[in-house]
Amino acid sequence: MRTFFIFILLLFFCSMARAQDCACPDGINNDNDGKPYKTFRFSNGRELGICGYAAVENNDTSYTMFTLFQCEDKTPVKAWGANQTCQAEQVKDDLFIKEMYGLPIGQSFSTLWRPFYIHRFFYKNGALQEVTSYRKDLPKYSKQQIEQVFEAYKNLSKDSNESTMHVANMLFWAYTSGNKDAEAALKSIPDKFGPFDDVIAGEWKAIFATYENWKEKNKTN
Image (cartoon, rainbow, N blue to C red; front, side, top):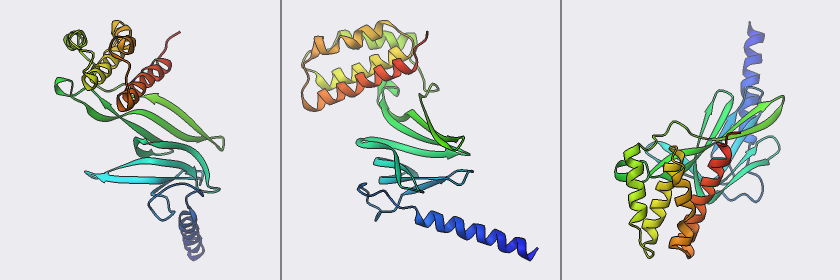
Protein backbone atom coordinates (compact mmCIF):
# COMPACT_ATOMS: atom_id res chain seq x y z
CA MET A 1 0.00 0.00 0.00
CA ARG A 2 2.84 2.37 0.90
CA THR A 3 4.55 1.64 -2.44
CA PHE A 4 1.36 2.41 -4.32
CA PHE A 5 1.00 5.71 -2.43
CA ILE A 6 4.57 6.73 -3.31
CA PHE A 7 3.91 5.86 -6.95
CA ILE A 8 0.83 8.12 -7.02
CA LEU A 9 2.86 10.95 -5.46
CA LEU A 10 5.56 10.56 -8.08
CA LEU A 11 2.96 10.73 -10.85
CA PHE A 12 1.50 13.87 -9.28
CA PHE A 13 4.84 15.65 -8.98
CA CYS A 14 5.86 14.64 -12.51
CA SER A 15 2.60 16.06 -13.78
CA MET A 16 3.17 19.29 -11.86
CA ALA A 17 6.70 19.55 -13.22
CA ARG A 18 5.51 19.13 -16.80
CA ALA A 19 2.86 21.82 -16.27
CA GLN A 20 5.46 24.20 -14.84
CA ASP A 21 7.79 23.53 -17.78
CA CYS A 22 5.18 24.65 -20.30
CA ALA A 23 6.44 27.97 -21.63
CA CYS A 24 5.42 30.16 -24.57
CA PRO A 25 7.21 29.62 -27.90
CA ASP A 26 9.95 32.13 -28.67
CA GLY A 27 8.76 35.27 -30.40
CA ILE A 28 5.13 34.96 -29.26
CA ASN A 29 3.72 38.21 -27.90
CA ASN A 30 2.09 37.88 -24.51
CA ASP A 31 1.60 39.84 -21.31
CA ASN A 32 2.11 36.96 -18.87
CA ASP A 33 5.93 36.88 -18.51
CA GLY A 34 6.39 34.18 -21.12
CA LYS A 35 4.02 31.77 -19.41
CA PRO A 36 0.81 30.42 -20.96
CA TYR A 37 -2.39 31.90 -19.64
CA LYS A 38 -4.06 28.51 -19.79
CA THR A 39 -2.99 24.92 -20.37
CA PHE A 40 -5.18 21.98 -21.36
CA ARG A 41 -4.17 18.40 -20.52
CA PHE A 42 -5.45 15.41 -22.48
CA SER A 43 -5.81 11.80 -21.36
CA ASN A 44 -2.79 10.77 -23.46
CA GLY A 45 -0.58 13.07 -21.36
CA ARG A 46 -0.19 15.70 -24.08
CA GLU A 47 -0.77 19.34 -23.22
CA LEU A 48 -1.72 22.44 -25.18
CA GLY A 49 -1.20 26.01 -24.02
CA ILE A 50 -2.46 29.48 -24.88
CA CYS A 51 -0.05 32.43 -25.04
CA GLY A 52 -1.16 35.93 -25.91
CA TYR A 53 -3.45 38.45 -24.29
CA ALA A 54 -6.37 37.72 -21.99
CA ALA A 55 -9.22 39.66 -20.46
CA VAL A 56 -11.73 38.67 -17.78
CA GLU A 57 -15.26 40.05 -17.78
CA ASN A 58 -18.18 38.66 -15.76
CA ASN A 59 -16.03 35.63 -14.84
CA ASP A 60 -15.54 34.81 -18.53
CA THR A 61 -12.00 34.79 -19.91
CA SER A 62 -11.44 35.79 -23.52
CA TYR A 63 -8.23 35.72 -25.54
CA THR A 64 -7.01 37.90 -28.37
CA MET A 65 -3.81 38.01 -30.47
CA PHE A 66 -2.86 34.59 -29.13
CA THR A 67 -1.28 31.32 -30.16
CA LEU A 68 -2.31 27.77 -29.32
CA PHE A 69 0.78 25.57 -29.03
CA GLN A 70 1.99 22.15 -27.93
CA CYS A 71 3.72 22.35 -24.57
CA GLU A 72 6.12 19.45 -25.09
CA ASP A 73 8.09 21.09 -27.89
CA LYS A 74 6.61 24.62 -28.10
CA THR A 75 5.25 23.90 -31.58
CA PRO A 76 2.62 26.49 -32.58
CA VAL A 77 -0.69 24.91 -33.62
CA LYS A 78 -2.75 27.93 -34.66
CA ALA A 79 -2.68 31.70 -34.17
CA TRP A 80 -5.43 34.31 -33.92
CA GLY A 81 -4.96 38.00 -34.66
CA ALA A 82 -5.62 41.24 -32.81
CA ASN A 83 -9.06 41.59 -34.41
CA GLN A 84 -10.22 38.20 -33.15
CA THR A 85 -11.58 37.45 -29.68
CA CYS A 86 -12.08 33.88 -28.54
CA GLN A 87 -13.18 31.79 -25.62
CA ALA A 88 -11.64 28.42 -24.77
CA GLU A 89 -13.28 25.40 -23.18
CA GLN A 90 -12.12 21.83 -22.66
CA VAL A 91 -14.76 19.09 -22.49
CA LYS A 92 -13.14 15.76 -21.66
CA ASP A 93 -10.65 15.16 -24.50
CA ASP A 94 -11.93 17.93 -26.78
CA LEU A 95 -10.62 21.50 -26.70
CA PHE A 96 -12.96 24.10 -28.19
CA ILE A 97 -11.64 27.49 -29.28
CA LYS A 98 -14.71 29.62 -29.95
CA GLU A 99 -14.40 32.72 -32.12
CA MET A 100 -16.71 35.56 -31.04
CA TYR A 101 -18.82 37.37 -33.64
CA GLY A 102 -21.08 40.41 -33.45
CA LEU A 103 -24.38 39.03 -34.76
CA PRO A 104 -27.59 41.07 -35.35
CA ILE A 105 -29.77 38.72 -33.33
CA GLY A 106 -30.81 40.91 -30.42
CA GLN A 107 -33.99 42.92 -29.99
CA SER A 108 -34.62 45.22 -32.97
CA PHE A 109 -31.65 43.54 -34.71
CA SER A 110 -29.17 44.81 -32.13
CA THR A 111 -25.70 43.26 -32.21
CA LEU A 112 -24.91 40.54 -29.67
CA TRP A 113 -21.43 39.06 -29.31
CA ARG A 114 -21.65 35.29 -29.34
CA PRO A 115 -19.30 32.33 -29.93
CA PHE A 116 -20.02 31.43 -33.55
CA TYR A 117 -17.09 29.76 -35.34
CA ILE A 118 -15.78 26.79 -33.39
CA HIS A 119 -12.38 25.08 -33.64
CA ARG A 120 -12.38 21.60 -32.08
CA PHE A 121 -8.97 20.14 -31.25
CA PHE A 122 -8.46 16.51 -30.24
CA TYR A 123 -5.90 13.73 -30.50
CA LYS A 124 -6.45 10.72 -32.74
CA ASN A 125 -3.87 7.95 -33.03
CA GLY A 126 -1.38 10.24 -31.30
CA ALA A 127 -1.80 13.10 -33.77
CA LEU A 128 -3.49 16.42 -33.05
CA GLN A 129 -6.60 16.96 -35.18
CA GLU A 130 -8.69 20.06 -35.87
CA VAL A 131 -12.32 20.25 -37.04
CA THR A 132 -14.11 23.56 -37.58
CA SER A 133 -17.81 24.35 -37.74
CA TYR A 134 -20.36 27.11 -37.20
CA ARG A 135 -22.90 26.96 -34.40
CA LYS A 136 -26.38 25.95 -35.49
CA ASP A 137 -28.22 26.59 -32.24
CA LEU A 138 -28.37 30.40 -32.45
CA PRO A 139 -31.80 31.95 -33.13
CA LYS A 140 -32.73 32.39 -36.78
CA TYR A 141 -34.90 35.13 -38.27
CA SER A 142 -38.61 34.64 -38.62
CA LYS A 143 -40.43 35.40 -41.88
CA GLN A 144 -41.53 38.75 -40.45
CA GLN A 145 -37.98 39.64 -39.41
CA ILE A 146 -36.67 38.81 -42.88
CA GLU A 147 -39.25 41.16 -44.39
CA GLN A 148 -37.96 43.88 -42.04
CA VAL A 149 -34.39 43.16 -43.16
CA PHE A 150 -35.31 43.73 -46.80
CA GLU A 151 -37.19 46.88 -45.89
CA ALA A 152 -34.07 48.22 -44.16
CA TYR A 153 -32.02 47.27 -47.21
CA LYS A 154 -34.38 49.17 -49.55
CA ASN A 155 -34.19 52.28 -47.34
CA LEU A 156 -30.38 52.47 -47.24
CA SER A 157 -28.71 55.57 -48.65
CA LYS A 158 -25.27 55.59 -50.27
CA ASP A 159 -23.62 57.68 -47.54
CA SER A 160 -24.86 55.66 -44.54
CA ASN A 161 -21.80 53.47 -44.14
CA GLU A 162 -22.34 52.20 -40.59
CA SER A 163 -26.01 51.47 -41.28
CA THR A 164 -25.00 49.73 -44.50
CA MET A 165 -22.62 47.41 -42.65
CA HIS A 166 -25.28 46.60 -40.07
CA VAL A 167 -27.82 45.78 -42.77
CA ALA A 168 -25.19 43.70 -44.58
CA ASN A 169 -24.76 41.69 -41.40
CA MET A 170 -28.55 41.36 -41.16
CA LEU A 171 -28.67 40.11 -44.75
CA PHE A 172 -26.01 37.55 -43.91
CA TRP A 173 -28.09 36.31 -41.00
CA ALA A 174 -31.23 36.25 -43.16
CA TYR A 175 -29.27 34.04 -45.56
CA THR A 176 -28.22 31.69 -42.76
CA SER A 177 -31.90 31.63 -41.77
CA GLY A 178 -32.75 30.08 -45.12
CA ASN A 179 -33.61 33.06 -47.35
CA LYS A 180 -31.77 32.76 -50.68
CA ASP A 181 -32.77 36.25 -51.87
CA ALA A 182 -30.71 37.66 -48.99
CA GLU A 183 -27.57 36.25 -50.63
CA ALA A 184 -28.09 38.29 -53.82
CA ALA A 185 -28.84 41.42 -51.81
CA LEU A 186 -25.71 40.91 -49.72
CA LYS A 187 -23.54 40.55 -52.82
CA SER A 188 -24.98 43.77 -54.25
CA ILE A 189 -23.78 45.90 -51.31
CA PRO A 190 -20.40 47.07 -52.79
CA ASP A 191 -21.87 48.03 -56.16
CA LYS A 192 -24.87 49.84 -54.72
CA PHE A 193 -23.29 51.54 -51.71
CA GLY A 194 -19.51 51.42 -52.22
CA PRO A 195 -16.69 51.92 -52.63
CA PHE A 196 -15.78 51.75 -48.95
CA ASP A 197 -12.69 53.19 -47.30
CA ASP A 198 -10.59 52.31 -44.26
CA VAL A 199 -12.61 50.91 -41.34
CA ILE A 200 -15.80 50.38 -43.34
CA ALA A 201 -13.89 48.47 -46.02
CA GLY A 202 -12.49 46.24 -43.29
CA GLU A 203 -15.95 45.63 -41.86
CA TRP A 204 -17.33 44.70 -45.26
CA LYS A 205 -14.42 42.36 -45.94
CA ALA A 206 -14.99 40.59 -42.62
CA ILE A 207 -18.74 40.19 -43.20
CA PHE A 208 -18.30 38.87 -46.72
CA ALA A 209 -15.49 36.50 -45.67
CA THR A 210 -17.76 35.10 -42.96
CA TYR A 211 -20.55 34.61 -45.52
CA GLU A 212 -18.20 32.79 -47.92
CA ASN A 213 -16.79 30.54 -45.21
CA TRP A 214 -20.24 29.81 -43.77
CA LYS A 215 -21.50 28.88 -47.24
CA GLU A 216 -18.52 26.60 -47.84
CA LYS A 217 -18.99 24.87 -44.49
CA ASN A 218 -22.72 24.39 -45.00
CA LYS A 219 -22.87 23.55 -48.70
CA THR A 220 -24.93 20.58 -49.76
CA ASN A 221 -24.12 18.29 -52.65
